[in-house]
Length: 63
Image (cartoon, rainbow, N blue to C red; front, side, top):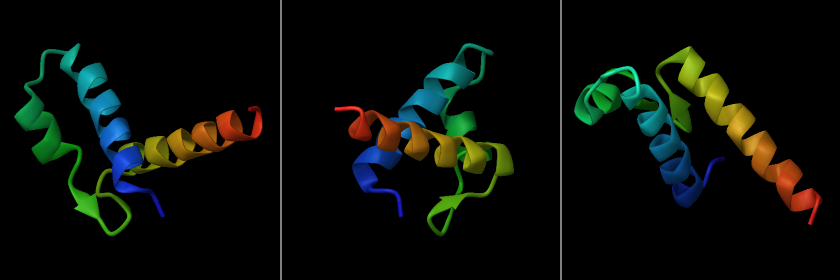
């Protein structure tokens, strides 16, 4: 399960990246970041969340 702090970090990173394409934050949050349980409705965003968590876990192991 993803913590609320980690989820907020992931969402912020996704929003900033997609904003580079000219979308407004509200459009991104409505269309891409709709939550579905512990994940997101969009499978690409869902996969991104999974790899985000893996990267954080690897970073912790390396400390």
